[in-house]
Image 1 (cartoon, chains in turn blue, orange):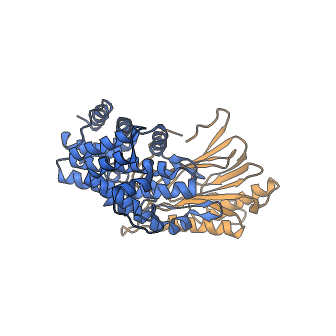
Image 2 (tube, rainbow over the protein chains, first blue to last red):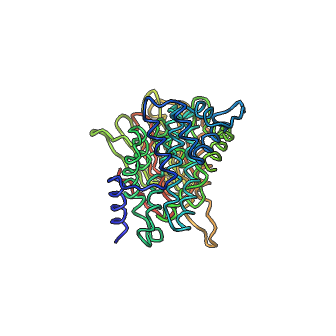
Image 3 (cartoon, each protein chain N blue to C red):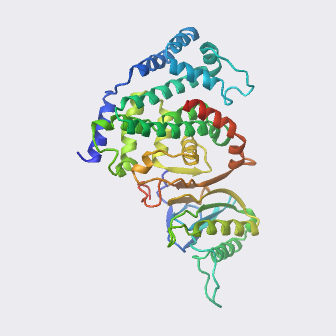
Length: 278
Length: 170
């Protein structure tokens, strides 16, 4: 089977909703459904989250990060953390856990390592996107954070399924950056029920055109993706790697320069990246 | 990227070319280690783009300005700025390109891109033109569109040094 056919098969499977998640992710999916229920109380949600150790740790960790806790008052219980973060951020974290656990779907240690590097890239992009949204593009920071978390979900799914198609991740994945990423990504994002505004932003990322001046949620993601210190490991497989040479990007934002804003926000970005990676 | 209107003039700049225009003009180019500067007059909505390959040369007497060299491309800008009855300081600049594309004989990188970028910054500063945005360096090609009617620039930077740009937009 050629690479293009494999990518089409994987996209079609995701579109049919035939995505199998590991057991831990099942709890995260239940939390996601609870978040969609308008009658869900803080108590019910906290109890549900507390049943899933990875999610609980992430919720408390993020709530204590500089990004969400500038005063530095640490908290250690799930209920207080949920109340500090709010349901929108919680939705991002639940999705983060589901994506992270796609890693477990792969029987191959090499593939799991690849997914680990992809998560590192994802964490950087999500944390940067949140700051860029707030201070540069004036978009909703939580929407940008969420978009950052899900922007590589197609690639995670590809890696998770790669064992079914031997040689896929060792062949030249040129088609991935052409149409494959959008094909698979679109199907997985729809299966996860990602909202339309996030899909639009990710479509813009795949389209690849950054507007200068940067204004939209899509620009936010593109900027975060290009500024992230580590790129997606799939870029190496499809011959699109920047080989560690990140572009120098600067923009005048009001009276400030982007470089100054990023320097000013470094602690916030680092704390959020670290909390996501753990 | 926003689709261009039907009645616009689409200009594609090859290395060394230059265009200055107004109204419904979209100027596009593809950059490696070369540098493009866009200049835009926000009130008059006129502007232009150059695409230079090297910083400067010893220009022979009476030779016409050659847009392949940064200093001469900038002279072309200044001529159009003056012809339009405007002043350089009224324009907004954006600077792009200067990617690391070539390897030297020993495998080391030739510094053409960074030199082109530094030269562009100096030229703009010498005429007190505000530099609003830059997207420079790194490894790979850039595809650029400059909409003269809005001053917006659209930039695709998708790839590494060996890759081709695959986005369908032209």
